[in-house]
Image (tube, rainbow, N blue to C red; front, side, top):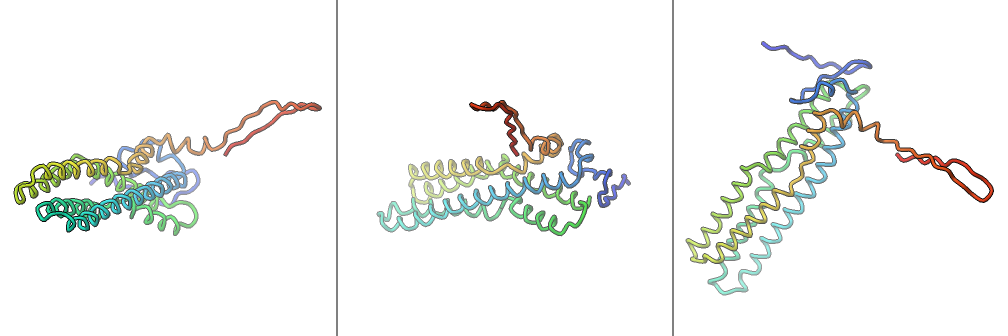
Length: 238
């Protein structure tokens, strides 16, 4: 059996070993409260972007679906399949968002609730759970932009086009529908937030955590001259 790490509440001068695979040894030497604040703030911002991205694309695909269903009866019967199949294609976009939501939208409030219950010094077990949530959110984003998703996008839209071509003999419309659906799917995939991935890379390096507090204060001294006096001007930026 391998060595077992027992995590205990952090005390001044002690360290919480990082459980994030690939993390620099320097990460474990940093103050746990700073590490927890780093993870929590980055997940919170990434979750906000993920909700905007999900809502925007969900609304767009819903509008496309309803729009095509509304327009279909206004056209000749021979042309109506273009709209109905196009609507089905748009429904697929909504289904993908609902079936594979970004984990950060759940992980961020989970961590917020966990941190809110934390009393006194940061517990190493709480920090370990924060790291686990960060890794999970980053993995979810990585999978959302993986070659599997790109391949599924191609396959789904090719099948949609084949329905129009084989069953309704609407090959020009089939090509347009498949190409449009594929393009929209690619834009959706490529615009997916990647904040958790970026935060995980920075966290593993440890440099961003150690410099975060140091860059908070900026100051500048200059000479101030007036008709009747000369002095120094001090400017502070937080």
